[in-house]
Picture 1: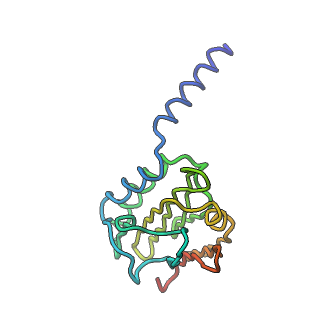
Picture 2: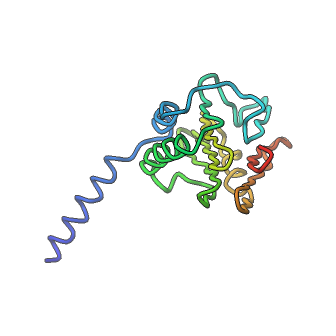
Length: 179
């Protein structure tokens, strides 16, 4: 009986591990879900992107995807697709975030080399009808630690994550009635 139970656990572990995707694959899938397209940073972003000269959180061309002003049906379609993809990312990769079904902000990090990481940031708002996905490569451990330690405040349809990055830079996610 014990052997059969352990065998079942092994099969379940293999099945779950086989469905896991990395952050690059997750971003590629998220950027192709309905109502979302690859875009350039603009004033609609619910995050302030820092200007960092020596590495850090740099968003390259093609690594930002968003959908704005979505109606109720589009919000459901996009949200369901996004969560289906995000559920395939190992939970251990989530380093910060919050979700109350009105506003969502998640930060994922995945080690890729010596002191570097891939980072995926997800911000979605049912109230604002927006979904924003940002992918950054070669993010130093110090930046990931700052993102992980950043306090998150959530109230109703508002979310705030304010990270103090090395070199006096900041990375802020602010989602409220005005954004």
